[in-house]
Image (cartoon, rainbow over the protein chains, first blue to last red):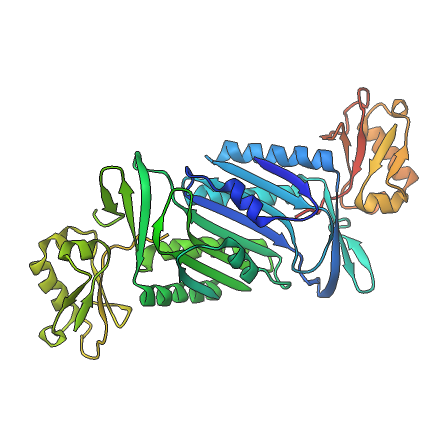
Length: 136
Length: 136
Length: 78
Length: 78
């Protein structure tokens, strides 16, 4: 498994890692910065991670995916720092013999990442900023 | 929508097309050549397309996906010619505001492509070759 | 008129096209019937469809106005 | 010992770390209680977890053997 916190997401690197002659299917999810959120224009996002713990939690999720599906390879890469609208902030991916497992595992990886991995998104609008999800 | 029959799959081109500042989610499926099929070693695949009809059928599938989900962009790219184990033969992809639609649409695109698009896979083993799916 | 052939159908018939006279066949179904008599190995396929003007055609469809006809053996893209 | 602070917790407390004496708190729960009294705005958050040695910790977990403690406000990666 390729599990990393990076400054800049590299899709080609993720695909290169996942692709293998024993796999017939690769599924990749890329999360990107939207220019609107809650009806307001987003200027930028800034991501902050508790890196050592984030890597551990991502590793646990990847292991859980391997227990649920028969997978060749798994990728989880999250960016930190300032990201502008359109830019990639996260990649999850899985390769497998058949496509169903790759799709299901890739979706599981991003769903779980959002629940437990200690990374925080600071959303900047023109006139204010919020830590996403912080308040009920 | 980006719908093409090509000699060589280009993942970066597919992602560039899908990515947009109004989207928060991109899902990409890449089908690749496996080195084994039915327990035998695969030497190569050769894909043949009835190109004008294949493009029309892919277009219909993309339109059907747009009717089922709210999507930003759709990609369907299939390669023709000789492909070796590990090489990419098809990409489907979708971008959307939220990830659920991107995942579901991307899977729909590849599922439907396999059912109706007039493209044929000739599988070459060491000692023989078969047209995949031809016989019951 | 030319009948376009692909995949296993090309191998069975031994060419990538076949000259036919569309007027000899009232419908797609009649063309399919004639082909399966001429090339019995086509009957062993999982399915055989016909495309008229690069669209899937039903058996009862006429071949009048056909400017492009193709035989579509079971597809296996992806 | 240093309590690591992230995200909105860092903003509320006004620093990315806070010096604490782990021996003052028998459990994670006691530390959380003390923090929410010192920084009442923490109570407005959707949730506050504590990580001990970079693993999520239950409220009844001891802080003995803790070499790294962090406050984990609601995560929002992805």
